[in-house]
Image 1 (cartoon, rainbow over the protein chains, first blue to last red):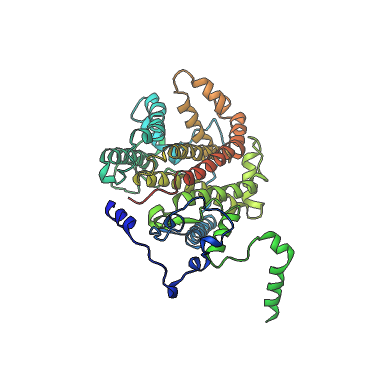
Image 2: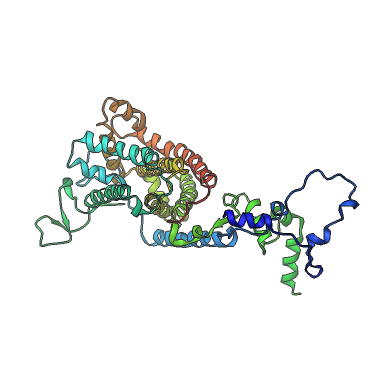
Length: 205
Length: 242
């Protein structure tokens, strides 16, 4: 690095070969012909950047926009087909006096409901979601800070902890969705050789 | 020059057309840069993006698709609002009416429902993608926090919308949520009164969830989305490859 810099400073600047004169050379005027004073000399390489950094960017139009357009189109078609062929669930009119055999929360809260079966409601209904949000949401980016270490192999603790939390969440949600039946008892859907089998899923989206 | 070509040219040369579009259809780098900068919808983007950011396998378009689903849900939701009254006596029959006699009512309700579930799912996936890429690290810490708030907004939007059909599924699902809130230490009754409008799910709950669902939460989410997108640009664009 320092060597090349010294080389550049020592380099003798030769007059431009007339056959290779560029636009900038043609615009040059002899110093005496100028009706103004010379205030300062600025090194040419500071004004005209000859060596350009290698560029790893592409134009947003068309490269990014085409991908976005394609993704939005595929999603629209998918949603339209879903909407045409699968109807949203709708049961009987709400009745506070008639408890249904299976009452389940929406799937994203079903993990919490599943944990009600294992722990005291204060733990599973309040402390667990509160700690999840507090830790994953607001504390994590302020304690795992080193911006150089991004590869999962360079931050094993964070990756293992986060993956464990994800797997635990997925597991309780999975059990809540598929393996809980009437009265929130454990059931095994569709498998008649189990004692607690049921003939369908007790779940609606 | 055929007739159609002349009509096309006349339209493009007309004052009305040129008042709509400042620049002709962009064909080179310069005009494409202008098109992105000068268009209110496209100017969320920088003119150039880094090469790895346009690889599908880097982002899987998860954040963009979450936002697209938000837009789809806004449009379908506004259409459904025309035919729905948040009252315990008419909500359920309004849903039946939407499904039976409103033009494209059944399709709109289905798309709204499936889109809502997909949005929650995609926001979860987006969060996991960002974590495994280490994209929450400085200088992007605060944008991660905004993202988690947006996840909570998404869940809250989905949860409040869940009650609106006023059928057995929604009534008992929200009742479970109400019971969970009752285990909050110290402030259980105030929370139930504030969010659910009482100690059991009823007319107050329906009206509160409706107002939250169609007005409060979408507004808050839109503001957070604006900050989220703004911060992506200000924090140096999408995070670099591993």
